[in-house]
Length: 196
Image (cartoon, one colour):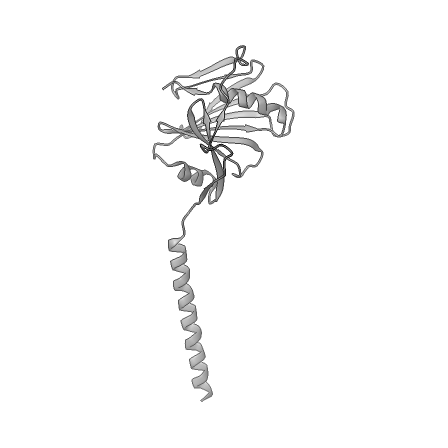
């Protein structure tokens, strides 16, 4: 009789384990890989415009890249460098301030990534940063729609904007903990344009 009671308990435990496994498989099979949550925007149109160039950049140098169809201005005392990614699917532009005020390097980066797979912005962010949710707001740069993400990994980036244009994703960011470099970043954004 004692053995029959133990057999009943073992059967009950077995049923509970099977039910837990089935529930776990169902949960994992229906789970969505990423959730991107738009941050509330203070403007009614849900788009924050980056101010257009007001002439303050007249004495700045102009960078033009015909291959990627971009043009922008940058401070004449800043150094500019370019590099092609090791797999030829990325192109990096780095603008370095003449005086490095922070340990982070005080760089403005424009990274252009091949998007031949035509990933949506959510898919691309998931690919580079993993599961979210990540908050963003829609911004406009000279009539160009962009997303500014506020909580991606690598928190040293004060500003990080993404633009999907043609078969590329453009990431424009500033890596600095110095408020002094936010103004040149904003002015550079005000001159950023696509030529095609």
